[in-house]
Amino acid sequence: MRGQARGLRSRPAGEPDTTAACLVARQGAAVPLPDAGGVTRRDAPPLILVMSLVTTSLVFDLQANNSLVRRFLDEGYDVYLLDWGVPDAVDSANTLQTYCDEHLPRAVQATLRESGAEEVALFGYPLGAVLAMLSLAGHARMPVRAMILLATPLDMSELGPLTSMLRDRRLTVDDLLDWSGNVPPERIKQSFQLVEPAGEITTYLSLWNSLGDPERLQAHDALVRWSSGHIPFPGAAFREMTDLCIHQDALVQGRVPIGRQIVDLADIRIPVLSVTGAKDKLVPAASSAPLALPNADLERLELNAGHAGLIVGRRAHKEMIPAMLEWLREHA
Image (cartoon, rainbow, N blue to C red):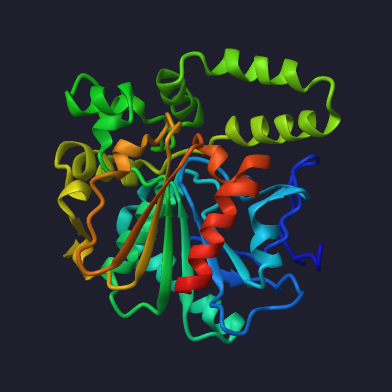
């Protein structure tokens, strides 16, 4: 591996080291950290990874031989990570405006200052894809050359029992919040278990099949550690998304009220790649299908993979990631 990022925040023992040049954003403060070294493609914009609000970004860099970050670095991209941190009671007031109008544009500007580039490319997964898309649509002059949206949840009716109960008002947002004003990790985990009730059995079967192969066992442990490591969902943002995206279908309609403006997805005018997984049960391809960006150069790529399998595992590194890299080479 060419180089390591320096100055990263401390992490619990056993968690993988991050190789990207990271951009850590908390409470609106963006702090660029040193890059990872190595040979950079002079014609390529720095790439900002934008993660969801309910899981950590470890999936981008699970292991030395199972790392999306390392693949991008090997291709000559400067890679930055927009890390939302772990929300607490203070973050419960964060809204879509907090992320789309404040944190993300500041992260782009900080990346440009750190890298010396004039434009960036965005890589969002999966709710991170929604945030990246809304931020760009609301800031048409933001210097973004291209964007990859991975497993983007648009049609919330396709996401399973929890969204159905919220849509039918059998469940309210207040039913899900804890003392901090956030949706706690255990509620998020329960919602995923409703989508994949046999998921725990599948996990044990995968563990059993990995016992004779140390490499596969390490990969299994790393993936389970990430997939079970949910973080709180900021309460105000969850309330807003429930109203706008579940009750009003604003994302499907392509016009989303954020702050004092109506963000129109038609204002996105750059190359966009929407990637979905044919076997994805958490964000089915049908949920991403309504994506309409009439003024963008939009391409769709459906891969024969599950949710994490789009970027993690041997097949991802042989088929899925190379397909995304090829698109980046052509459009960024």
